[in-house]
Image (cartoon, rainbow, N blue to C red; front, side, top):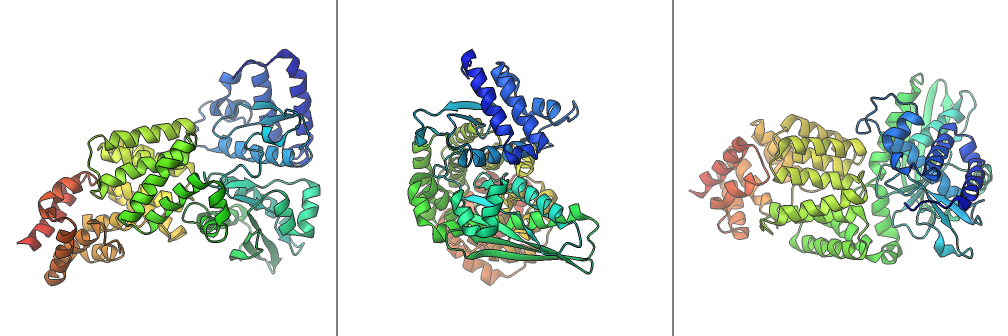
Length: 525
């Protein structure tokens, strides 16, 4: 960052005090201290010391053995602070000549002076119309009764929902509001949402009757007013408020976040203009999602082309780089590409993504694939754990790394991760069933393995007939097994003689590879 001119210091501190007087910050001493710390360090030209560790120790008073890989507290508070700054510059600070901005992916603030008060000089984090992510407004829950301290519980629930949803790369969240904004919300929630550019609203009500706590959570499309999702929770024992809060948060967040959640599906269904406005990125994201739900060569090549185009036009978009890297590897997995440089090209893409955003979960997901292909099982486990740690509620991505751990030979660990993710949200990539099938094969539970193979329904890939043939062979259903062998040979004529090589590229347990290979070879005699 360029050294700041001394004559601007006074302007920066004046703007800082103005922001700190904003109601949402005045009510949060921790966030106020966070903002003051990073601004003062930057003005004093100590910005190279502004790291996750220094913020945790100096601002949040964590111990000196703080490890950011085990504790996301700094990232969560930074997300909350960015949302408050966003709200401030959209409301009472919209005419200020100086803007304090903390870009996503780092903690060093930028000080941006608006030229001639033109809107286009605003940073991307402030502009409502320059963000490819859907924006969710988390409005306060209404406390219907006053028997318990429900207002406090409502505040805690909204804070936790905001924090957990902020962990998704594909969602922007607004969750702290001034008293003026609260008044607008109470009058008309749809108009209030539109005034801050929100695409969706999370709200609901809380009531307590006869010691039973009842919570209803609603997700609304702010443009149409339609309910996208509604869920109810009843708790008889209300002593453990934190447990109740966590249960509700995890249930809601897992269902609505990510590329397999309600919000992404609703955007595609009801807001085609959102895709048109950011055509290359959204085409890449949408085609990625389409392929993961419906495997075909047409969908694979469409996604590959769209992601490659998106990275050219938007080279600083971390998620599309990570997705492109994953697609290079999928070409090997499904015998579409088999170039020896493919893995290195995937690695180049994922390193590009992580350089842009070290906390991009999609990048850690792809890095787990890369480590699997490099047959580095310890690195595979490490990157998988980091991926999950970033956002354990991103069920689609989490189930994916669980599947990769099964491929790497961590059968029990991978299975439990996949199972937990599927329980949170049944929507997941189609190839997760390969992981479940491999797990049951490793346990010699051949009937369960066949049931998982049956769920694949991806007949354009060799994995579908191969695993159905192998599992049927292992339960002595030879007639049906030969039927799938014929389909396999139609897709890959020389497959029986190439199975060991292809399977070994992704499944690291040689015992498992040998068992599948022998089951197929038995049917080819």
